[in-house]
Length: 407
Image 1 (cartoon, rainbow, N blue to C red):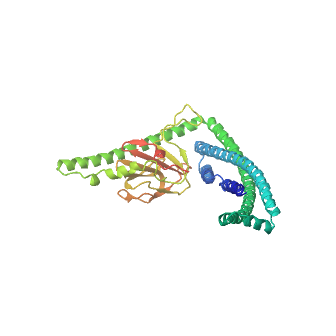
Image 2: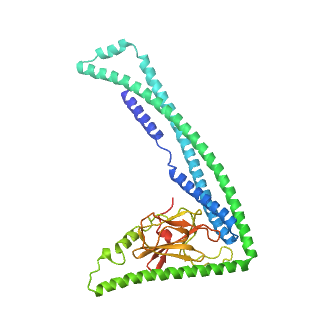
Image 3: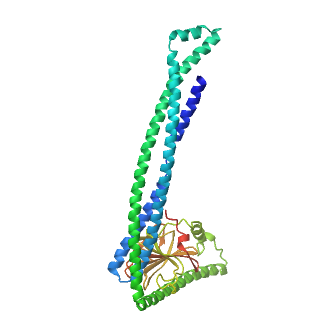
């Protein structure tokens, strides 16, 4: 009987261990969904502001298509969550049913043990069992056996109750999972409806742009001139800063002075620190990237190539704060057509450039720290976007490779 009770104890421990398994952590999915919803809301605000302040259909199309892209990601995320929940519910249902069947078997087995003990409940039987022992040692062992039998039967009764309570708790969890799945399905349907509306708006904008190709080409040419002017100016001031630093180093060497690494005109230690933080720099402003690095074809006239983007455009709210991504020195504050005020910060042999600002809170020569406010975004051509660039000496690099990944 003791051996059977030990088997019963092992079975109940196994059941409790299975029931104690936690549900799959959904915190990451919830965080991802919240980030996508926030990005969609930011884009929606920018679209409304653009529509009220500008008649530039291309600007609006860019924002709407970015919104569609984000909405599709959100739809995919919610669909994936629904699949995971459905799979979890199915597994839990099978698991709960399996546990219920095993519990029934365990209870039947336990009832037989209790029934057998009840049949032999007469104290005289137990006394006879003890008194028939051959010696005191055997009597002691028999007494211990009877005492342990009583204790373990009581213990197993408690464990059965715990397992039964665990099954009921699991059933409650299943009900909660079903409610969660239903809520996500409803949200998923709303997201699909929003996606269809955005796609319809995109089609309307494309139709509008196709009606007036000449107007767009004039806007494109004007934009090309602004981009080229900005690129030339950035190249000029970066080259000037590098040349000035190298000239100072050369003069120091000619005067037989040792150039110490930490005090050299180019702060090599700062360069190393900046490079070591590639992929970990904080974002200069909170918002989605609405135009990525490099060359892109026009979204409607796909044979036309847009002006090269040496940085990224980040959609933000009007008057949003812009912050330095790393320690450095402000080299220049300039004003450029189509880009408003621009701030160039040097980080040794690296440079970061922040454009489309209205208010600027720093000046040339200021030393700034990571996260320090440089200024605020202005509305330019009906858009509120931060144009952000990263250069390694005279070469522009993709800023998204330097910034920390978004959740």
